[in-house]
Length: 118
Image (cartoon, rainbow, N blue to C red):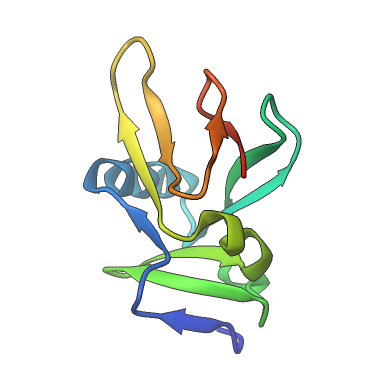
């Protein structure tokens, strides 16, 4: 691992259901991957969430790494300014299911729940 900050204090929380789901999806990839969470410009409300699996070798010194019992969540520090305190959850409901973001920094969220404004 690079010199990225390994944090025991978690700026981004993963609920148990979401952690189980990302571990399940990672295992389907057949590789030891991390989950990168971040933000980008766009979406209904101005900023949208992004999540993707990455190889641990791509973690940089500008990333914070949060460990969840051996599973690593990675967030770049610029995104973390907007995501600090975020809770990532997962629902398997037929309507409205999937990953859900509860962001205390969002002043407005769109109906789809995948974008926000600060």
